[in-house]
Amino acid sequence: MQTIPFDKPVIGFSAYSGSGKTTLLEKLIPILSARKFRVAVIKHAHHSFDIDHPEKDSYKIRKAGAQQILISSQKRWAMIHEHADEGSELSLPEALQHISPESIDFVIVEGFKYAPIAKIEIYRPALDKPLISAADKYVIAVATDEPSKVQSNLPLLDLNDTEMIADYIEQFLIKSKV
Image 1 (cartoon, rainbow, N blue to C red):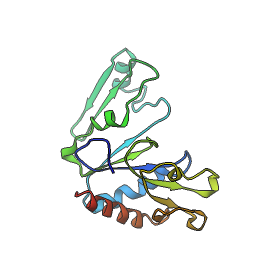
Image 2: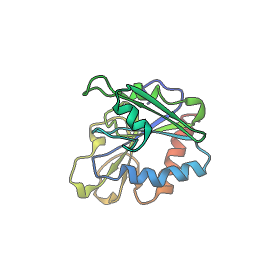
Image 3: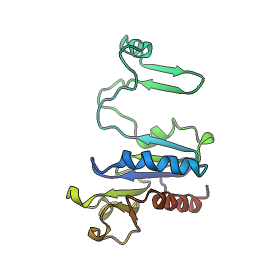
C-alpha cells in the first residue's frame, strides 16, 4: 500500500482539525516505545511555527539571516531550515528524506491528509464532518469515539482504547515485515 519510497513502514493519522491527532499520539507513542518500537514522527503544520525562543542564541542567529542552523548537544540535535519562498513547504517524500531509517522501526505521519500512505482516520461524529475514508483509498482503519455512528467497511478502532490502536499498528507492522 505504501507508494512513497522509504526503507521503513510509514503509517499516517488523518483527521480534521480538532479531532485529537496529537492527543492520541501523546498516548500511543509511549505504548509503542514500551513495546520496543523506535518511532519517528513527521508532523505537518499548516502555519508558521518556531521551535526556538527569542532569548536563545539559535533564535538570534536565525533572525540575523541564517538560512539553516543546526543545534547539537549530547542529548539531541535539531535543524532549523528557513524556506527561501514563503509559500514553499516540504512534501512528505522530502520530509522522509530527513529521517534516519537506520535508527527507527517505522514512521508515524500526523497530517499530510492526502498522502498516498496507509492511514488511520481519527473520526469524531460530533464534529459533523464527512469521513475522510469515503474518498481516500489509503485509509486502512477508522478510530472513533462513537462507533455506532460510523458507517464504514473498514476496521473500527475505539479511540479511547489506545492499547487496541497500538495492537492494530503492531499487526500492520508485522504485515509490513518490521
